[in-house]
Amino acid sequence: MKLSVILIAAMFALTTLTACKPKAPESASSDNYGTTHEGKAPEGRNELPGK
Image 1 (spheres, rainbow, N blue to C red):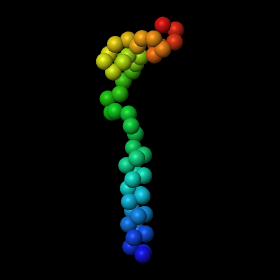
Image 2: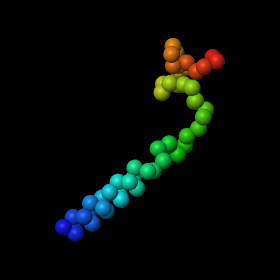
Image 3: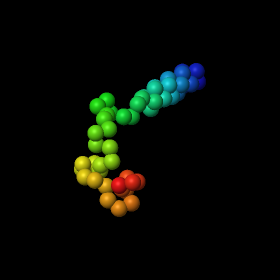
């Protein structure tokens, strides 16, 4: 019983450690801010306000 509790606690600790890492890529820059994943300007309802 104690062993299973210790194993569950260890697994919980490992999952919280891995889930709390930053999600942004290391080379993040704002050069392509406001473009689609293909590098094109957004159209329709996805356009940036004021453009």
